[in-house]
Image (cartoon, rainbow, N blue to C red; front, top):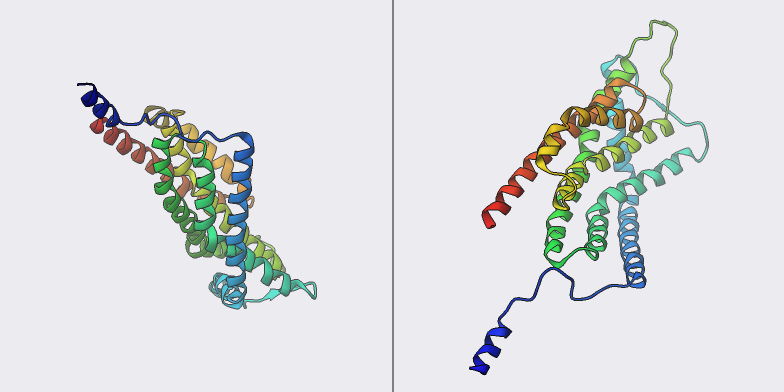
Length: 265
């Protein structure tokens, strides 16, 4: 009888509420150092790859400007004001696109570090979050490059001030900085669903709360968009609109997650 009880005890599941390994502060710092090193190694490799593709990338970035200038009836021309300007822009473009290229790798290590502070039953979500987060980041970047960027440029370059002797003279640096800055902003902003679903999983918010504060969220997104983009209505609406759509999508995702959880119970 004792042997039978002992055998049954071995089959009991291990409690899932605590990690088997407790990490000290030093362990967390060492884990942070390791993840940062791995993330930056991936970014460096991505930058090296993009260095060999720099001319192609700059040509892709310049294409919306060329199209927008032709649509408003002007000859496309980008100016440089310093001797090293083209070289520095080449390096900067390679760095930014290296970050975009290596973003799945970097995001994976960020979430692996976050998972060190989670319970075992919560860590499984990291493997779902990582590819979704990387996909949203890359989608946000290309959404601006392919959709919002050309529309914004056409509006800005074709805007009529009423002064006949105003001449458009865009420098290479100002144009590339405009494109790259907003590309990264859109990529980061598209992480909104991840943040909302994560907060819901942690019990910080629920579906009812997310639904009831829709109006305030919309106002908040407009304010954040105004701070993150150039001071014009077009860029602000261009960023706030997809973010609000993602917010509504996050509510749907939270509802589906709660429904599945209730079925499991």
